[in-house]
Every structure is written in C-alpha cells, then in structure tokens.
Length: 529
Image 1 (cartoon, rainbow, N blue to C red):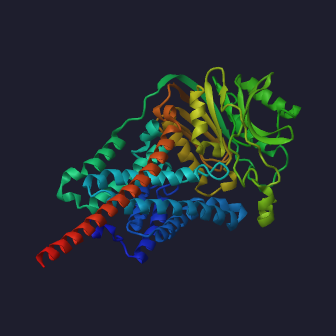
Image 2: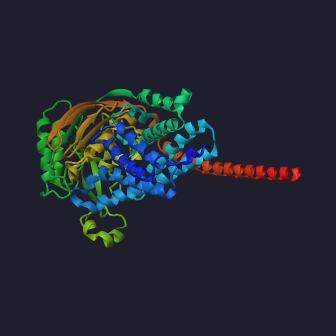
Image 3: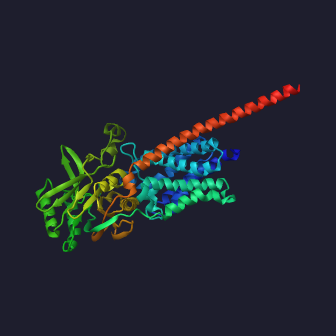
C-alpha cells in the first residue's frame, strides 16, 4: 500500500474547518433550505476530513460536524424552552456522530492495509463507510428512550431523483446508497480513476440504478374523499386558552365544508379537540352532529385517561355509536410529552422538567382504522419518524395514511417542513396517499408518487376536501422492513472487524518478509566471509 494513502488529505486545521462546513452544508440539504444536492456535499466534506486521522482526532472532527449539523437542524427545540434542551439534544446527537466518525476513520485506515487491490478500495471501502454511517444513524434512531431518528441522510431527498429508492429499501437503504456514492467518488479521485475509466463502473452503476429505478408499483383500488381541517387554534403548549377553545377553532374551520357532497371521512389534527368526547356529553354531541351532517365518520384526536394514565389518542367517531375505535400514540416524545427517569432529570433541571406536568403513556393498539370504505394507516406527529409503525400499518392493510400532527409549538421554524418531508417519503415508501393535517400547518395531501395534490397555507384556518387514491399491495421496503437496517449494521460491523483482522495479518506478513530478507542478507554475508 503506498505510504501516501495513509496520510491525511487535509492538514488538521483545514479538516476542522471542513467538518464544520460539512455539517452546515449538510443541514442546507434538508428542509427548509431544501437544496438536496448539498446533503451529498456535506457528506463528502465529513468523509474527506476523516481520512488518515487518528481515532482521537476523528472523534473531535465528528463532534464538530455533528454540532454544526444538529445545532441548526433542531433549533426549533429552543423556541419556547430556551437553549438548554436545544444544546443538550444537539450535543448528545453529535456525540453519536463522533463515535461513528471513529469507526469510519478506522475503515479508511484498515481496508487499504488489508488489501492492495484497487477494486477493494473502489467497492468494499465505500460500502463499508456507508454501512458505518448507517450504524451511527441506527444508534441515534433507537437509543436512548426509543431514539431520535431525525436528520437521517435520506430525509434530505424527499424531492430529489433518488427518492423512489425508499420504496425498495426504505430510508435506511437510501441513506446507505447516498453515502456509498460519495465515498465511492472520493476513492475514485484518490486512486486517479480517470487514468482507467473502467474504475468508474462501481460508483457510476450505483448512481444510474439509484436514479433510474422506478418506485415499486402498488395497485389503485378506488378513491376516498377526505375532508381535512386545520383550525389554527391556540394549540401550543404555552398558548393561552380556555377549555373548549381548540374545539371551537376546529369547528369554525370545518363549517365551510359541511355542505360538501360525498365526504367519506372528516379528519382533524392532533389536539383538535381539547375536550375528550368519551367523557363529555357536550363534546360527544358535537362529533355526533358532524358525523351526521357529513354522513361520514370523524377521525379526531384528544387526550384520554384510562387507569390513571394519560394517552395521546385518535378516535374513530360514528354518529350514534361514539368512539368505535382508537389509536394511542405509540411513540410519545421524551422530554416533550413525558419525562423519562424523572427522578434524575428533576434533580438536575427541575425548572424545565416541571413544565411538563402530565406524561403520556405509549399505546399498544394497532395503527389502523377501518373506515368502512377503506382501511387507513395512522401516525400521530413524531410517530411518523419511526419506520416500524409505518410498516405495521401497511402490513395491517392500510390503503391510505392519515397523519395528524400539532406543529404549534414550532411556529416559524423549519420543523413543520422537516416533518412534511418525512411524510412525503412515507408516501413513496409505502406506495400510499398521505393526508398530513396539522393544527397550524404545514398541511398537505400527497399522492403515492410523493407529489402534493392539495395544500393549505400555514398559520391560517382552512379546510380541504380531496379525492385521494386508495392503493393495495406492499412495497419491498415494507416486506423487508427491519431486515434492511439490521443487515447493513451487522455487515458493516462484521466488515470493519474483518478489515482490522486482515490488516493485522498483512502487517505481520510484511514484517515476517522483512525479517526473512534481513536473515537472508545476513546468511549471504556469512557465506561470503
């Protein structure tokens, strides 16, 4: 292996600047700047800074990249609670990035030592680097407290030519492809691949397949007329309101569409009713009236209480029957909807944790409603970022998805656009239409190709009546489900271990050969004497 391949590509000071710039540029690839090619540029700057580094240097470079990315990416968390939660989340996520950077720099060190083959460098190394990037994403998306899979590489590509890859291998698979493309291009340049254009085949073939592959076709089986309402009420955690204000705002925004013919379901957002109709006769009568007037069920969301526990609950309401089905939010947000290990965090940040008096329990019921005319898959707010819940809905027969959310605590930030981007990818991933309705916006109806077919202005009351396609058939992403991330993670860890073992054996072999050469020289000299 040439000695130059072991040297850093950049001096340390330049690598630090590249890492910081990489994190900032990477963020610009995500909503709201939404310049998706910049996500690839950010990945490239991160990888270039790690080549040839020690593990300790790689940790700090990864930390710099992670902070530069997460500080702007999740800045919406500081809107009402101030800098402490924002900084804590950003630093914690950046530490995972730093750990992943160490693994990646080991791959750059060990693979060239394990084999001098150019094709190993052009194929195995980029795939290994991409897999290790996914190892880090998998860690942030699962630990602790269920993880925070926000800011995964794929979520920058909802409106790019690469988006349709998610119908085959999901968001994890798309992220893997993105990093593999960048890492492959870097290796091609490092090996002066232009001197032999055949060396461009691996990365070029991957790029062509990723762009040219169509989304997996699902089968259209009809339409559902969905009325969805954005009340723009005082739905924020710290908004001043009286009991019933949210319900009144939603009713006012619903009024103009009550004479629309042929509505199959009325959809309200998360927190659309601040009065639980299962415990209030007056609220129950409101939903009875709505269901009767539209001759359709109502899907609403409210806070329910059972066995002295609180749930963020969506109800399927039928006139005269009441709540005929319910779905409790499966993934309540730690430090937002409940405080995990409260005894500990109360001790170190009691002023902040004290703001959250009521903690939600996670639900266990199936994330689908049978509407009679169709089966709808469900997700409540941040539920949408968890792959397993979406796959479960598709496997349970969902023909359309109804996403309810409340973005009122993040008015004026990029959070609602980031969440909408995830919803768009979910449409492509599952081959289903998505109705994404928010209390304040951004509310849109998205078809199975990821195209917006209806929308409401943010921060204004309004309603949509939209004919959405119903689809059946499951995509490979849904069929494979968790097998894709598990396979990538295990293969990456195994590949890194193998690279380390082979690199050590190769080094030992070189030492033995050098020792043998010295012995031969000594024998020759003795014979000559």
